[in-house]
Length: 235
Length: 260
Image (cartoon, rainbow over all chains, first blue to last red):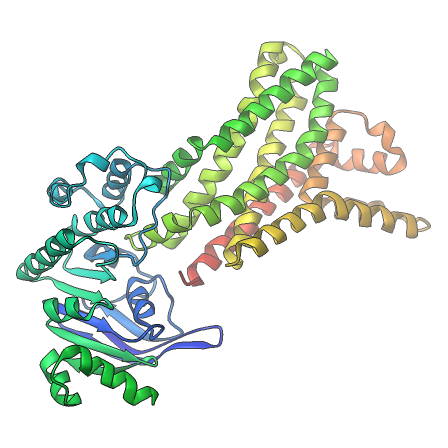
């Protein structure tokens, strides 16, 4: 699905990724984890072509992404901070994205799911953070793409929306899609993900299932397993 | 690209500032005609305002739009769109809406005053054309500055400096040079120097069309010989086009390499 070879990226003198090799097979939920500043968002943005790597190759669905923009038709991306043009109305934004990417009828169902109907005619600048995140989710899930990338999807969501989000993710997985998630909420990751990818200092430190991580670190639960990696490497 | 252009244009048309800009030109046009009562004189006064103000507005709007629409741009970058079409669409959206405010704001009062029946129509059209050129040039320069500077304050600073340099300082240096080297033949130099600054170029172009070049003395005669002919006019428009094309080219190149 996604294959990354020897990916390097630095911003000025700050080396963020130094030789990432990663293969993500088709189907399933993959969580990208790592401490702050470990390069999770940079990795995701490189896959999307928003960050141009210094070195290395990325291919999505078998095609290299260099000088290519049409492959993004196959990706649904949820950005980390839901900042939208503030003088657009919710309805107009949804219409605009549909106009840019092609039509879909899924938006109605998602708007109902997240109870966004009363906000459709409000300007995006006047919405609360959580509501913006819901709009963000609608925009992401309304297209039926084989690869879904979610950068911190839980930010600002209330408990009921969080449950709906989890259901949504599971139903997309059942449809055979590949889902890539980053999150700092370990319970959320443990609940939804099939496999985790742990980034540390610009490299992949661990890739495998959660149980494999627990055995590797000799810790009984997931949160402590992650914590032990961090203390071992920073001590 | 056309879809991005449409949305950027639509977005700007709904913003308060476009109306303020339009209203300003409407008022300026009406006031000048009311005070001057003479179309040709109004055109000259207008030129002096346009030559300084249009670049300033183009620069500030360009920088402001780029920084304000950053989120929108990031949203677009994750869509299956080419980078060049995103940025060209936005640039054209800004430049077109500014040019439209200019042309409509000045055009409407002059049309009501009867510009079509007067022989100042060509001077007036030339004024609007160079005004639009200046808008396209300075918006493109502003986008270049904004693309190269992540820091808004720095971006704004450089943009204002650029405007100040081309609108004021350049002329000062030019004059200083003429005074210091007055013993040498300078007409070639002055021709080239005024070609290299779009503001000077537009001013010369309009002044000479208005036939007040007699005021400019000997150099004026040389200029008249050059700019007054069709050949000079074509060269000048080519120079103005180049001033649009080169920065636009850099927008496309720079945007391809940028990280978001």
